[in-house]
Each structure stands twice: as structure tokens, then as C-alpha cells.
Image (cartoon, rainbow, N blue to C red; front, side):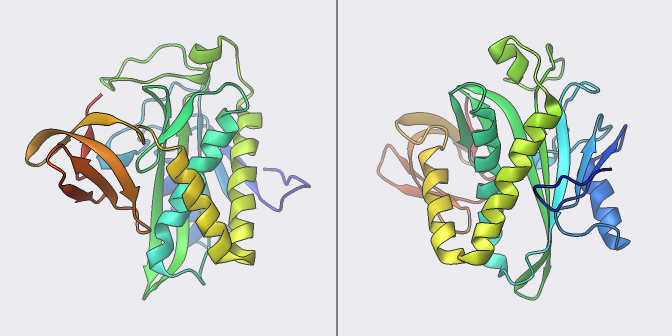
Length: 253
């Protein structure tokens, strides 16, 4: 563990865990993780993703880490703000290497039509407030081949053809998240509006008609809006507006 001089965080690197979110959650329960405590794993045996999926990551080749926040003054209705901030920070950090990154709702990171990363946020609520938020991030960095049944994975090395310093990339992401978080603490309403605007600007498939799938079947639709609580609004070919919570609609690739 070491303490960077430019931001007040503690970094811990471990060789192997089931998942960084689970490990960090246990540290929090034991009172061993102050705000911004960041846990990096060289390998996860049971890395988690959205929809309960596992995350394929070759040992030592990718960036898998979790960071904890204690936004105890935030109401639960603002949970999606942290999700947007984390996604934007990943996109911006990756954009230092090459253009073409976007955010697939709610918080997958895409390069063109391929997935390079994902985010899993686990919040603990008390009444109407957020007591604790653990943001888990997985980015494909130096992996050169993927063997799972995931349909469209890609790594940064595959894109640019060069080895990436994983620690350097991680610090870019962490700086972005903490910087945005501190701005939210200083002026929540103004900063949240700016984050929301940027998030919508950089959404994957935010312009045009594309195929989707929900419980009723396949359909064509165009993006309309992401609401403050994270619901996605699509307009189908019949002009109907469809509202979706997480996991209720699938992007057909």
C-alpha cells in the first residue's frame, strides 16, 4: 500500500480475490477502509458484472479495482449520479490513448461496437440516504485473446497495438472519479447537471434507430432520454415511449 501525495487515498494491491467489491465491502464492515480506499486485484476468481455475469480477465493483464465512497449527505435518489461519474471518468481516461469510446447504458464502456469495460456499483442505504457506495471497475487493458462466450470484448492493447501501464491508467480513472466527487460535494446541483449533460452526450447509440429486446420481444427504437434516476427512455417505430430500468432491455448487437 502507498499514499499518493496529490490525492488523499490509500491504495492496496492484492494478487487474487473472488471480487474486489466483495473484498472491499468486508474491509468496510471491519472499519478498515476510509473514504477513497482503493483495492486493486491482479486477478479475480469471481469478478462480477451487471445481470449477474462473471467478468473474464486474464491474470495480471487488466485493470480490476474497487473504490469506496461515503456520500452520507446524498439522498438515495441520486445513486445514478455516481454511476454516470464513474462511466465518464473511465471514458475520459481511455480517451487519452485513442478516440472512439462511448458509454452503453447504464455504465458499460464501449469502443465502437465492442465492450472494453464495465462498472458495478453496490450501495448501502439507510432511510433515504446513501451510507456507502463501492464502485467496482473492470477494464480490458493488455489482454490479447478472450475465450468466454462474451459476444464483443476488446482490450486497449488490441485497439492501439501497444502495452499499457495499468497503474497509470488506474490513476487517471481514480483522479477523474474523486475530482468529480469533490466538485459534487462543493456544488452538487451545478455539477450534477454538467455530469448528466456529458453522460448523455457520450452515450452509445444516442443517435439513430437500432434493434433492442425486452420481455415482449425484439423491436426498433431510437434513444430519447435517460432520466435522473437512471431509467432509459426509447421511442419505438409506432411512436410509443418505452421506459426501462436496469436489466429490463437488451441492446441487440
